[in-house]
Length: 157
Image (tube, rainbow, N blue to C red; front, side, top):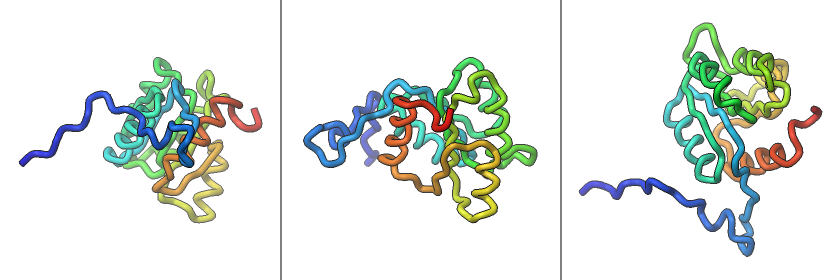
């Protein structure tokens, strides 16, 4: 017996949008978000979640692919893993490079990583990230910060 296929046009769960629900959220609809993680399942799942709530997403699994997409896609926010399989790139180097691109100063940079030790947090902050989440991130918390960014722009800019 094969499982039912996933819907091709998933709807946002009503628990997230029904104003009578305690979990109702304003969703970051229309925001362009770049998701980069070498764990393909994690990256693809995050991209799917963000697409379900109305974001336009590009998902890549390495820094080179992400950089190849940036000029055409022009992300407003990027969610980056820190530890990538590439030997000469990690999420911190990618964040610094994104900041140097046109529009990079206005982009919201979010580190989403398993790293939570003090030295890693310091390195993440020094790379120019606005926020750090330790995996797994609560979708509601991610939606909240993306909404706040969509309404108010990058903190401190």
